[in-house]
Image 1 (tube, rainbow, N blue to C red):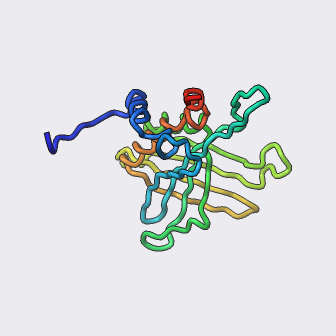
Image 2: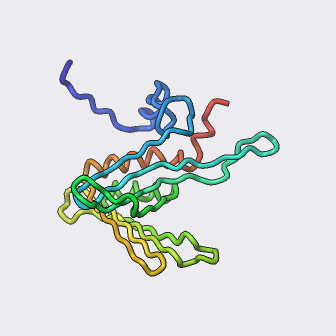
Image 3: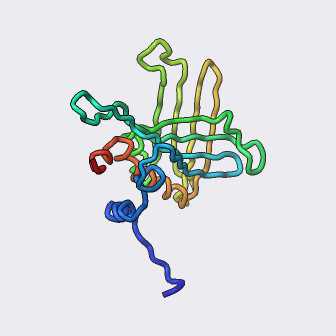
Length: 196
């Protein structure tokens, strides 16, 4: 009937049906496998904003014609402070890319309304070890609303920056569903099922 709402849970079966009927390949559109499609999910608040983007894995073809993953993808979080109402300083944003494993852990901890934190040293294992340190943390809001704070601290050459964005329950649910959907894709498993 008109006006009735239909609630469809985001299950694997639902996602497969969306893909089958033209919902795309999980990277933002269509069945054309176009690498020039860019999609992000944004949360905009008074004191800051965040965007979530998918970074595709990269593949190469070996001498036998097999497609082999060269580098796994990730889920990129970008946070920016506000400069005025509805204006954000994206030129001085903080960025943190979660691996597929980290994205899966974050989604599970969000579902349990539990805190989660990760630490990255982009120069680890090289001459630039310790030059840049990044800490990414989510923590439940103390009011029990189901929302959370997303925090990113960066230390580079002695300079420290901090970004924090409050995320409502609905926004955190959307982020969790996006993460669950993206994990097998940033790990490259969706490529196994593409038509040859």
